[in-house]
View 1 (cartoon, rainbow, N blue to C red):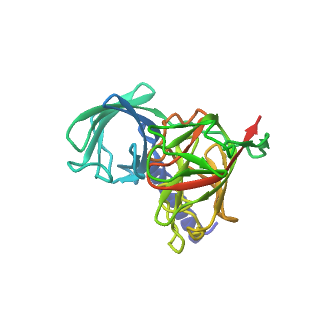
View 2 (view 1 turned 45 degrees about the vertical axis):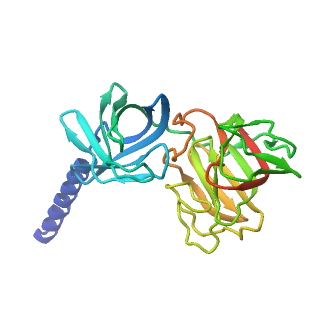
View 3 (view 1 turned 60 degrees about the horizontal axis):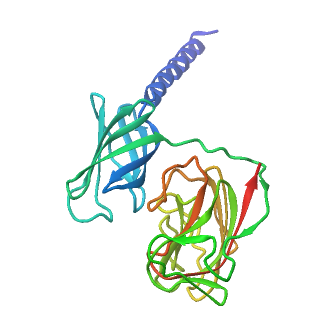
Length: 314
């Protein structure tokens, strides 16, 4: 081997070594890193929330946070001091006041800490690491179930004073009021839903009661994670597939593990994408458990004429 070739080989090996060392340092895991399912104790209620902490470069921790309502919010920096971490969340839909401040620490296999709300009041929270939900590539499907029978609200319950009615085979929420929750719970499933969203209205379907698929009057808008067909605050459709508000529309949704596919009005708008975590307004943050369907009724009028579920079977 001549000197020129030896020189080139030395430079290549040196570069590879430095790249490997740098990459290793950049990826060195901090025990805080990962996705966490939070529960905040506030005014006698348990508020489901979610936190993700990741590396940015060699020394900085960043993340995302979902409160009990609203969309996922970026965390510019998760600061560490001794064994305590902290981050600040600017107001989104919260009442006027200060930004929310979170402090926490490791607690055996989980996290625990304190939230200072916009009114300055402290509330405690705990978190467990979000589970890895198994994806079954060749799923087997059971018998389809019509969760709406076309006659009444059997199989559903309102979360508060009920404004939902059934007329002429149509399930309607004529005005903003209570959300509707199914009695049945599911793990993995296919859902076929037919609905009509009035002009300017806003609703949604929560898969397992935790992941909201938006139903909004958005024909002609650019696709967004907070508009028609989006997984709220997380997944953006590849196109806007909404029809006119005067028309009946359809969702065909498949959820296996964390992977979701959404076909809206015959168009595949989200294809086999992972849902990172729960969205605002979730029933709970227990991602490893089966969950109910929730139909949002607290944002505006909505109508359904079909709600058919096909569960995955082992």
